[in-house]
Image (tube, rainbow, N blue to C red; front, top):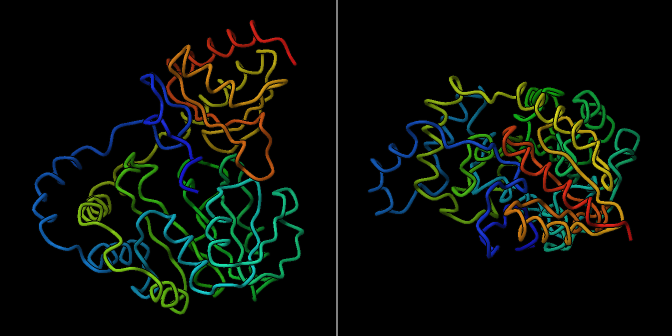
Length: 344
């Protein structure tokens, strides 16, 4: 799926005042990163490292793993495709509603798919060779306990479980699954280095797994998939940011909770619980596509229409809580919509 993702502001004719469609941290990139990349601009005059070896070394040191447990990616999305590609025409389970790229990648490489609703996850009988679980989940923002994931790893050793931690830094509900790597050979952990540092345009992530799985993924990976500036940005993050910069997640969750309380007073909408700063909404009697068009054209505000998420409907949409000032803009716009749009 090339189109149908969030953050499509570049496709809109009107300038966007506040972008609620992306669940990337709403802040500038880390201080000093832009200057560091400019100072190292000459790196683009040469091919990048084939496997981003210098960044892999820093990731290895940070997580206290072996380099054979790490593969650097052109965004976590590359890891999804490598997993599907390394053993084509197998079987895969996908917990829905969730990121559409899991299904797209598996279908691209001929996997037979099984879809399980998120609520059924703890009791599901996994029989496939591969399973994708986004935890906390996108687009719902809901997290499942790490203990429940460990139970699945124990009960279904024949299934490789890919746990996508792209939004792990946006929740207080769970900790990372990485410690489980020491105990289970069927665990793969996907990590993003862009969402919490506000640099998604650089495309950077990595995967942690057993040496066997890493070798299989590396065997189907193209050379130079991670560009030189992305590698340098990743090294800067591990050298300067991870130990010094943390998201104000408590404030973000508090603002989201407060905002959802305000939104709940607006008729014609339904709101869903979340463990992150982003959450699902539902417009009653109209489509989310109509709401999105109205908000863009009349208020220069952008939301994420989630109609293309399996398990959701044309009425569902996703919001990310931003600053109180920006959230207030959307609150007013939704009230204006509700006042002039009688339910169909």
